[in-house]
Length: 358
Length: 162
Image (cartoon, rainbow over all chains, first blue to last red; front, top):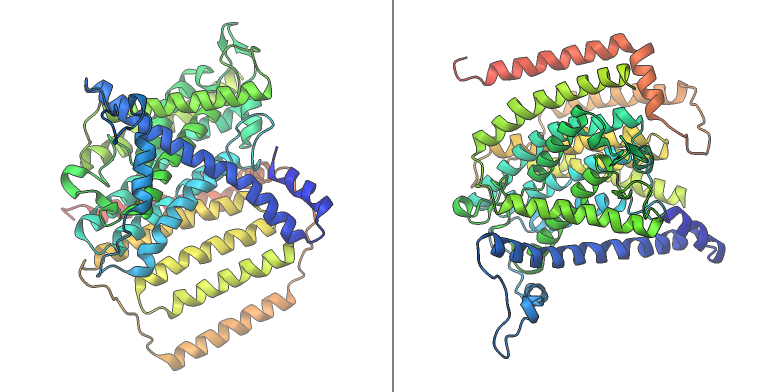
């Protein structure tokens, strides 16, 4: 179900095209926003629990009357969200007011635009672009403008350092991510997300699903480079030098509080969702079932797609609580001297592979 | 609908472009450029150039604009908020602008514009790829050679022992 379908539907009843268009876009957008909010709410809870279990703690449990956070602390994030919504919204006196207030919007837009193109199922996708893969890569880079804006407008040295680190990091890691995503595009010969998933139908050697990751050694390698670069692009540990708590307080979001800070958090988790969705689509068969030809109806497709995304988000959390933070020079070393050469070789290798084996 | 959206995007592009040149703070100019680039992306979409639109976002918004802002922030002291760029040599500038405007106006009126079909083309990337690799291979390679030269030059200049 795309937004085009909704526009056509509403155009039959409503004569004014702008009203029909706005109505269709709003109706398609609200579930996406609900998804973003739900994703952040659940992911924050899971992150707490995962981190706790990895550190041999029990995490939020909710004890005692009055301050009860539900069984196993499931209401913890609800309480957090409520706290953030009623918190005072402070703007530093020396901050650049306009840019300070605009930055969360831009970061949010960057995250939201990415979700709009994800193929949730064979029939459920808000917009089906011809250049879908490239589109998601493009809108993911809009967020960095917001980060730099937030860091500069805060007029605070930690914020500024965080923002500059973030810009350097995201721009660098876009290159290996972009070069690795070329591998599936070369193999499928299309940038359309639905066609990319349809290319991955069937099975290899009778057992494995015909996902691009299992297709050849180069695409196998490309997935890992893409995924690690994607983690770096979402500014998560071990690549979280932009907010490095132990050095920069909270990096570029030091001065933010209340709802504006909540928007940053929402966008971070939405970005994780988007890059996981892109990785799942381009390498892990999108809405295809892991057992070829088994439970492949559109509704099951939604289940498989979300399942893959949730698994990849879990892997990101696993990274976060396992690896220590990288230093700036190590970060750049990994990107420019390891990932980019391997990604280039991957493109070359896949070209040869396609020429010889097909 | 399409007309309304076109005028909205055109107004966004021109309005923010005006902000870029008239803003007192260099950083405000850079951020206004963001909206100009987004507006140009919208104009590409109106021309059915989906690939070019996305390239516009990746290259200009995600790359060049971030580097511009990065450059401004690196050369600017943290405490100083205003880097003003004032106008100098207004007379000569006006003459040059007038010349450019008349040359561009002449070009706009003398070019036979192609009317695009009012339907979405099936695939643009394949056509672009074929054109780049077949008909325009030499300019394409020349541009990549130029960029490689720029890359090596930048690396050499930023070395400490140079």
